[in-house]
Image (cartoon, rainbow, N blue to C red; front, side, top):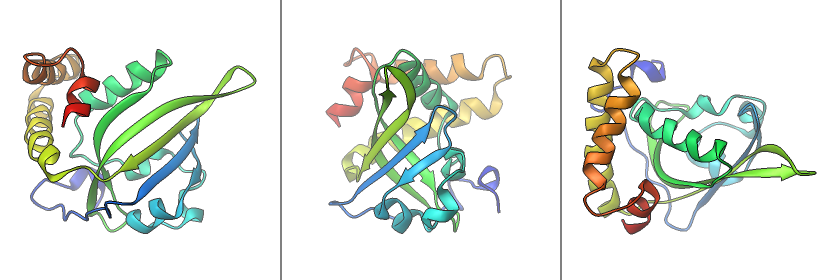
Length: 173
Protein backbone atom coordinates (compact mmCIF):
# COMPACT_ATOMS: atom_id res chain seq x y z
CA UNK A 1 0.00 0.00 0.00
CA UNK A 2 1.44 3.40 -0.95
CA UNK A 3 0.90 6.58 1.04
CA UNK A 4 -1.55 7.76 -1.62
CA UNK A 5 -3.71 4.71 -0.89
CA UNK A 6 -3.92 5.35 2.85
CA UNK A 7 -7.15 6.69 4.24
CA UNK A 8 -7.92 7.97 7.73
CA UNK A 9 -9.83 4.72 8.34
CA UNK A 10 -6.95 2.45 7.28
CA UNK A 11 -4.12 4.27 9.01
CA UNK A 12 -2.89 2.84 12.30
CA UNK A 13 -1.44 5.49 14.57
CA UNK A 14 1.73 5.12 16.59
CA UNK A 15 2.30 7.51 19.48
CA UNK A 16 5.64 9.19 20.13
CA UNK A 17 7.09 9.02 23.61
CA UNK A 18 6.50 12.32 25.37
CA UNK A 19 10.21 12.84 26.05
CA UNK A 20 11.34 12.05 22.48
CA UNK A 21 12.64 14.66 20.09
CA UNK A 22 12.76 13.65 16.45
CA UNK A 23 15.43 15.55 14.54
CA UNK A 24 16.23 15.72 10.84
CA UNK A 25 18.16 17.92 8.45
CA UNK A 26 17.71 18.23 4.72
CA UNK A 27 19.55 20.00 1.98
CA UNK A 28 17.84 22.73 -0.08
CA UNK A 29 16.28 20.04 -2.30
CA UNK A 30 14.73 18.36 0.78
CA UNK A 31 17.03 15.35 0.57
CA UNK A 32 17.61 14.01 4.07
CA UNK A 33 21.17 14.56 5.30
CA UNK A 34 20.73 13.70 9.00
CA UNK A 35 18.28 11.83 11.22
CA UNK A 36 18.54 11.03 14.89
CA UNK A 37 17.83 7.67 16.52
CA UNK A 38 14.31 8.74 17.60
CA UNK A 39 13.41 9.44 13.95
CA UNK A 40 14.53 5.93 12.96
CA UNK A 41 12.84 4.31 15.95
CA UNK A 42 9.41 5.77 15.30
CA UNK A 43 9.50 5.72 11.49
CA UNK A 44 10.75 2.15 11.20
CA UNK A 45 13.37 3.21 8.65
CA UNK A 46 17.07 2.78 9.23
CA UNK A 47 19.40 5.75 8.92
CA UNK A 48 20.77 4.21 5.72
CA UNK A 49 17.27 3.98 4.22
CA UNK A 50 16.56 7.65 5.01
CA UNK A 51 19.80 9.48 4.18
CA UNK A 52 19.69 10.78 0.62
CA UNK A 53 15.93 10.28 0.28
CA UNK A 54 13.52 13.14 -0.26
CA UNK A 55 11.69 13.95 2.97
CA UNK A 56 8.48 12.97 1.14
CA UNK A 57 9.40 9.39 2.05
CA UNK A 58 7.45 10.01 5.27
CA UNK A 59 4.69 12.18 3.75
CA UNK A 60 1.24 11.09 4.83
CA UNK A 61 -1.99 11.75 2.94
CA UNK A 62 -3.66 12.79 6.20
CA UNK A 63 -1.80 16.06 5.65
CA UNK A 64 -3.54 18.82 3.70
CA UNK A 65 -1.57 20.41 0.88
CA UNK A 66 -2.62 23.76 2.36
CA UNK A 67 -0.47 23.16 5.46
CA UNK A 68 2.58 22.20 3.40
CA UNK A 69 2.03 25.27 1.25
CA UNK A 70 1.92 27.44 4.38
CA UNK A 71 5.13 25.83 5.65
CA UNK A 72 6.92 26.56 2.36
CA UNK A 73 5.70 30.16 2.38
CA UNK A 74 7.36 30.59 5.77
CA UNK A 75 10.57 28.81 4.82
CA UNK A 76 10.94 30.69 1.53
CA UNK A 77 10.53 33.93 3.49
CA UNK A 78 13.39 32.66 5.71
CA UNK A 79 11.03 32.28 8.67
CA UNK A 80 10.67 29.32 10.98
CA UNK A 81 7.51 27.24 10.85
CA UNK A 82 5.57 25.67 13.70
CA UNK A 83 2.84 23.16 12.90
CA UNK A 84 1.25 19.81 13.43
CA UNK A 85 2.32 17.12 10.98
CA UNK A 86 1.28 13.50 10.47
CA UNK A 87 4.10 11.40 9.05
CA UNK A 88 3.95 7.95 7.46
CA UNK A 89 6.03 5.11 8.83
CA UNK A 90 7.69 2.37 6.82
CA UNK A 91 4.84 0.00 7.77
CA UNK A 92 2.25 2.61 6.61
CA UNK A 93 1.22 3.48 10.15
CA UNK A 94 1.43 7.16 11.05
CA UNK A 95 2.54 9.38 13.90
CA UNK A 96 1.61 12.98 14.73
CA UNK A 97 4.15 15.58 15.76
CA UNK A 98 4.42 19.21 16.73
CA UNK A 99 7.17 20.38 14.38
CA UNK A 100 9.49 23.35 14.24
CA UNK A 101 11.30 23.77 10.90
CA UNK A 102 13.97 26.40 10.36
CA UNK A 103 16.18 27.25 7.43
CA UNK A 104 19.89 26.90 8.21
CA UNK A 105 22.80 28.62 6.52
CA UNK A 106 26.44 27.93 5.75
CA UNK A 107 28.61 30.88 4.75
CA UNK A 108 25.50 33.10 4.55
CA UNK A 109 23.93 30.79 1.96
CA UNK A 110 20.83 28.68 2.54
CA UNK A 111 22.10 25.14 3.07
CA UNK A 112 18.86 23.38 4.01
CA UNK A 113 16.29 22.91 6.71
CA UNK A 114 16.50 21.71 10.28
CA UNK A 115 13.41 20.13 11.85
CA UNK A 116 12.69 19.18 15.45
CA UNK A 117 9.52 17.31 16.32
CA UNK A 118 8.00 16.52 19.66
CA UNK A 119 4.95 14.66 20.87
CA UNK A 120 1.74 16.69 20.51
CA UNK A 121 -0.82 16.74 23.27
CA UNK A 122 -3.97 14.71 22.84
CA UNK A 123 -6.00 17.90 23.36
CA UNK A 124 -4.21 19.56 20.43
CA UNK A 125 -4.84 16.55 18.18
CA UNK A 126 -8.54 16.65 19.04
CA UNK A 127 -8.59 20.09 17.40
CA UNK A 128 -6.07 19.50 14.59
CA UNK A 129 -7.35 16.19 13.22
CA UNK A 130 -10.88 17.40 12.35
CA UNK A 131 -9.48 20.64 10.92
CA UNK A 132 -7.01 18.80 8.69
CA UNK A 133 -9.70 16.30 7.67
CA UNK A 134 -11.92 19.21 6.56
CA UNK A 135 -9.04 20.63 4.57
CA UNK A 136 -8.26 17.24 2.95
CA UNK A 137 -11.95 16.67 2.16
CA UNK A 138 -12.17 19.94 0.25
CA UNK A 139 -8.84 19.28 -1.48
CA UNK A 140 -10.12 15.93 -2.79
CA UNK A 141 -13.04 17.63 -4.54
CA UNK A 142 -11.25 20.78 -5.71
CA UNK A 143 -9.73 21.39 -9.11
CA UNK A 144 -5.95 21.80 -9.22
CA UNK A 145 -6.35 25.59 -9.50
CA UNK A 146 -8.71 25.76 -6.50
CA UNK A 147 -7.04 23.20 -4.23
CA UNK A 148 -4.80 25.58 -2.28
CA UNK A 149 -7.19 28.56 -2.11
CA UNK A 150 -10.06 26.39 -0.86
CA UNK A 151 -7.92 24.44 1.59
CA UNK A 152 -6.40 27.65 2.96
CA UNK A 153 -9.85 29.15 3.27
CA UNK A 154 -10.95 26.29 5.54
CA UNK A 155 -7.88 26.85 7.72
CA UNK A 156 -8.27 30.61 7.99
CA UNK A 157 -12.00 30.42 8.70
CA UNK A 158 -11.27 28.05 11.56
CA UNK A 159 -8.47 30.00 13.23
CA UNK A 160 -8.77 33.73 12.49
CA UNK A 161 -11.62 34.24 14.92
CA UNK A 162 -9.12 34.06 17.76
CA UNK A 163 -5.64 34.10 16.26
CA UNK A 164 -3.61 36.32 13.95
CA UNK A 165 -1.57 33.48 12.45
CA UNK A 166 -1.31 29.73 12.16
CA UNK A 167 1.76 29.83 14.44
CA UNK A 168 -0.23 31.61 17.18
CA UNK A 169 -2.95 29.00 16.80
CA UNK A 170 -0.50 26.08 16.92
CA UNK A 171 1.40 27.40 19.90
CA UNK A 172 -1.83 28.00 21.81
CA UNK A 173 -2.86 24.34 21.69
